[in-house]
Length: 145
Image 1 (cartoon, rainbow, N blue to C red):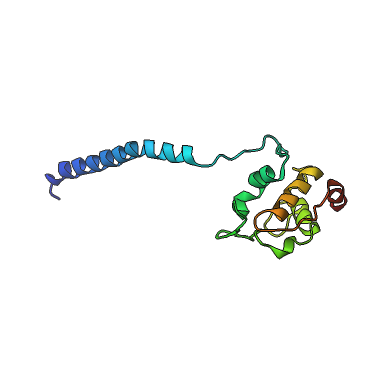
Image 2 (cartoon, rainbow, N blue to C red):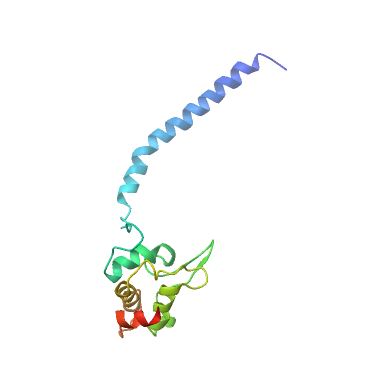
């Protein structure tokens, strides 16, 4: 082994480390700016959702899997689209699904009141390209529990 190569390799390694650190430091303002431009997400506190209107509840509980415009997603799992979805024609199906869950979807019954479930279901059925105008009431949701 040629001992004269060791200092060269050490110096090269140190230069590479310094370069990587310098690039990381240079990217901090860009990453900070990108993070501040991202849309804010309202997180619920505790064990119950605090949002009361359908749109806020959708953003807090549905959008993470079904996406902001309800287009759904595939990858590590399958998250069906809610946009233009004929399965939402009856308010009972989505209300029951939100209450009790389905396949890979968790149940939200113990985290939302009947009124909150009615609100998020009614929002989903009248937005995201859906035009189902027969709302479900909190009383109807209560019967599905």
